[in-house]
Length: 294
Ligand code: NAI
Image 1 (cartoon, protein in one colour):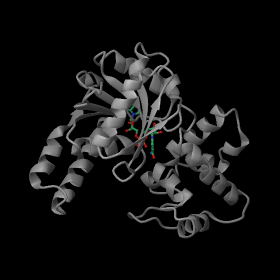
Image 2: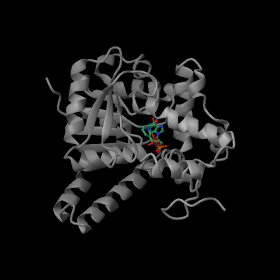
Image 3: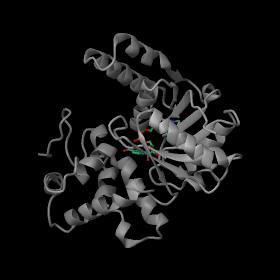
Image 4: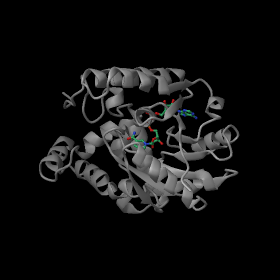
């Protein structure tokens, strides 16, 4: 039996929550967006309204469709407002303790048949579900940044997830224009495990003085066909997200040296140079285009 997700709650109105909200609304879902920071919801809503206006200007939506999108997006002032959701997608901070207590609180609010998913990049889906009363309705649903352009979503079953839940999530991914990929509940799943090689090795090349980061980005784009180099990607993801992901994957693989995180990203995170969203990462972001630091 396929479950139908008509009303979708999204928690965390940051880069990922906003992107997931966009594609879900555009596909016809009613979306309720919640964040502990009301300003974050407002920012996401303003950005999405502006996005739908731009799409209407370019003829990608007609004016009536743009207006309907705006009407399907609701700001939730409290978690309780997600009580009638069929599906709740969590995209909050990447910390196991925070995600676990978030889901315990959420489970007390939602219907017993609502499906709950986490957009975690690196944490164990089974561990996040450990304290749930109904872990069979819980799964990983891992989107990539920027969500509207990156068309893959990993669907991850925890040890207790009902297979029908994963099947329904895969169907919903297709409905919102994405390609579902079934992944196992292992550190980094498929994409962030395979991608380790490029990120950690590129950081090693810089720390050994073999090449600078801009050269590595340029070569991987020009010669290996990457759309973004590893340092551009870290700037896009932001180090407050990707450095903890590197630490988490390293720890979960029992300190496997291949995955050892770098002091370069630790230092930059400590300095607040996290990437595009802070205006400076490996590159400076004066406007939309990356620039090399002076
Ligand atoms: P972000 O920092 O842009 O946004 C997170 C939002 O969650 C913030 O607005 C914050 O106020 C809110 N928040 C924190 N605790 C909350 C709580 N208890 N309840 C409700 N809202 C809360 O982070 P981003 O980049 O959107 O990442 C979110 C999640 O998605 C993380 O788990 C991350 O690992 C995952 N992810 C991130 C990707 C990326 O490239 N940035 C890619 C794929 C997954």
